[in-house]
Length: 196
Image (cartoon, rainbow, N blue to C red; front, side, top):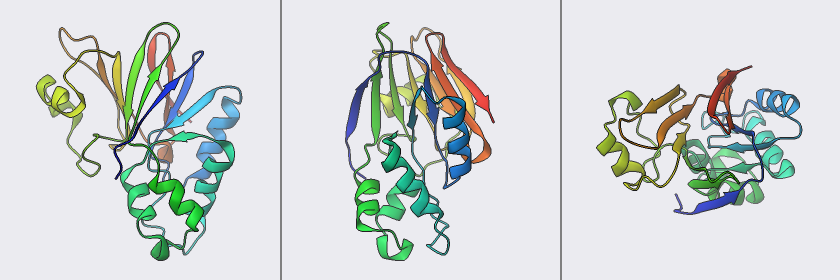
């Protein structure tokens, strides 16, 4: 896992957010068809660590991301597959793509709103702690204590959620899993959950 956080400035809403595709290229293509003119970002897990190269699903999804220049974070499956190139029979270009993905995005919009995006936690790809069990202090420990953004958006848990903490500006939000047809749209009014 690297520690790179990429800063991205978007000129307009909406922004389409997907995560946990797990090689389901058809669902990604369906989202792209629904929003052909909108930017898409992915919060990680484009590949599936259970596909050991028997099929070519991991190859196709990695190539699709590269060819379509879709911004993506590194998820736990991406880290694992990228670190085991021979086992997963991926090319050196595909390996390089996976291992060099950032762990976070800070995204800014012209209206002054800023969001932090991670696959799960910046220093923990593998935990599966329930978001509703995370106190505001735990949230601050995981994602930073400064209330300098409008929200933290994550994938990994395959859950759609929005948590508002009392007396805090930012929200804690989960996008779900595109593998199961779940994604989100970020607008000037906040995050909207969607299902194919």
